[in-house]
Image (cartoon, rainbow, N blue to C red; front, side, top):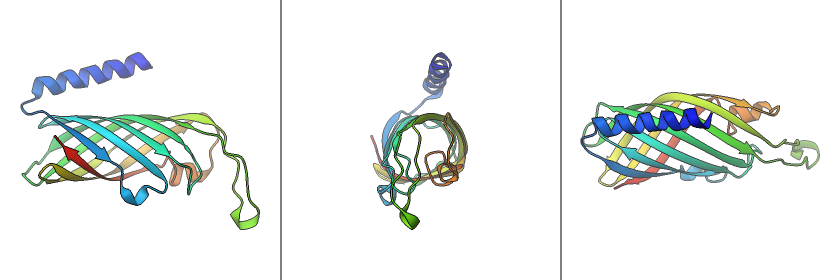
Length: 175
């Protein structure tokens, strides 16, 4: 599996370099509104047509209770670019590790036990990036499929790290 991912990454990088006219690097920071649940960063190598991103997210385990780390690779195909915005189509693969959490509380405040385990997934969607000189705002939405090695509650697939909706709002800086 690692060899296949490395090969895919190298092919995308080669195609990116061969089509490139203008190169840039970007740092994407997670939406500040979601900081109670997670913190993440994406590093992007971008040309005028293709972007290759490496992403890392740390989930704290608040609402829902799924602490752990998620890593991913994303490819973007940019189109309809103007001076102030760019549209793109993206595809991503991801994997994560969920930490174990013991059951706690009583009644309404009861929290169920969460088992430790790994999960993997892939997603596709559309996005738009607004430019403000070197700063940018990045909006994206799509669908994601996630498979976990351990049984999961519905919250994991609705609002947790394995959410089938892949919605992001990021701020960033482009070099």
